[in-house]
Each structure stands twice: as structure tokens, then as C-alpha cells.
Image 1 (cartoon, rainbow, N blue to C red):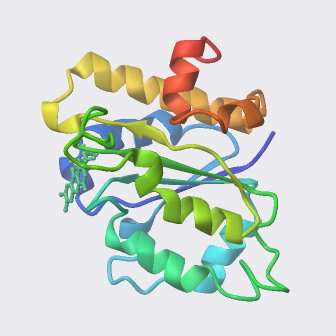
Image 2 (image 1 turned 45 degrees about the vertical axis):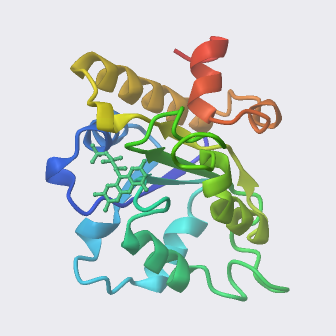
Amino acid sequence: MKKILIIFAHPAIARSMINSAMRDAVTDLEAVTFHDLYASYPDFLIDVTYEQQLCEAHDIIIFQHPFYWYSTPAIMKEWMDLVLEHGWAYGKHGHALEGKVFLQALTAGGDDAAYQRHGSNTFTINELTSPYRATANLCRMEWLPPFAILGIHRGLPEKTIRDHARLYRNTVIALRDDTLDISAIQQQPYLNIDLSTSGKIN
Ligand SMILES: Cc1cc2nc3c(=O)[nH]c(=O)nc-3n(C[C@H](O)[C@H](O)[C@H](O)COP(=O)(O)O)c2cc1C
């Protein structure tokens, strides 16, 4: 069983529709650590040694967050700036994350049509998340395409929220139990779209 660390950033979880449902869908899972950055560090004073130890103790690292300005909420950037140190995460002697799997689980207001080259956001989710892919590469991690839930601005019916949360839970279980074909999945634009349409997970 792989150990999964979900690093979570949402500055207003009390008002969250989708991330709170996703959180509730995974917190009871064995071998999964759910780590809420805003709850842990309301003053942004991140404990770098503790965070590095947490990463070292897990095989798979998931960044779960709403898409804010085509990126993550601020504390996740602060986490990256401080925790991913040269000589630990990257560089000649920085091998702490080598071989671990990296996944972004993001939710966005814009829908799939908006995240196309000719859509209103001009760029795809894959293009916009490329700095995270580059970071995973630099840290010698195995990158997976994002688990992306789009179109939240339209407002999602309760059942759709439940379905997304269930697929997220099942994806985390499949990663934990190592039942996914990672190299096949790496060819897909979104992890969840492939999984839900291919019948690999339901
Ligand atoms: C400060 C801020 C910035 C946002 N930036 C984006 C963005 O760049 N692209 C987008 O599609 N949605 C954007 N949104 C919408 C959020 O991604 C959306 O409300 C969120 O994913 C919903 O998740 P929740 O129900 O867990 O809060 C933004 C929202 C806020 C508050």
C-alpha cells in the first residue's frame, strides 16, 4: 500500500462547495494523510523541517486546491518556496522526492470550453499547470496529469458534487493500491476524465 500525502490549500473552506466534499471523501482512508495548510499555518509560518519529514514519509504527494488566478492559493506557493530546498528537493544532492508521484487535484470556475486555445482563457489546464510539471521534473518526481474539476461557476447540483467526490476518493484509492497504469494515464489531459470514461474507475 502506497502512502499518500494530500497537501490542501483553501483559504475559505467554510464557503467551499467542491473542495470540502473532496476532503470529506478521502479523510477516512487508510494510508492517506490529509494536511490542511491554512488550518496548520494561519500565520503562514511554515515549519519546513516538519513539512520535509512529512514528504519523506509518503510515496505520493497530491496538491489539492481551487484554481486561483490560474495557479494555487498563496500558501501553497509559500510552501513550495520554503520547503523545496536546493540540496533536499533538487540539485546534485537533492534526492528527497525522487521517484515519488506528484498529482494536482484542482477545481476551477471556468469550464472545459474556456480552457482551450480558442476559449476565453486562451490556455489549456495542462499549459497553465506546466510550472508544477516542471517542478515535479526538477525534483525527479513522476508527474501525473491533473485531476481537474471544471465549470464550478455554473454551479454544480448536489449529485454532481457527490459524483466528483466519489471519483476523487476512488482515484486516491487506486493510486494508494497501485492499480493504475501510470504511463498510459500520463498521455491523457486530465486524470479524472480518462478514468471516468475508460471504465478503469467508477
Ligand atoms: C481569488 C480567486 C481567484 C480565482 N481564480 C480563478 C481562475 O484563475 N480560474 C478559474 O477557473 N476560477 C478561478 N476562481 C474560481 C475558483 O477556482 C472556484 O470558485 C473554486 O474552484 C470553487 O471551489 P470551492 O467550492 O471548493 O470553493 C477563483 C476564485 C477566487 C476566489
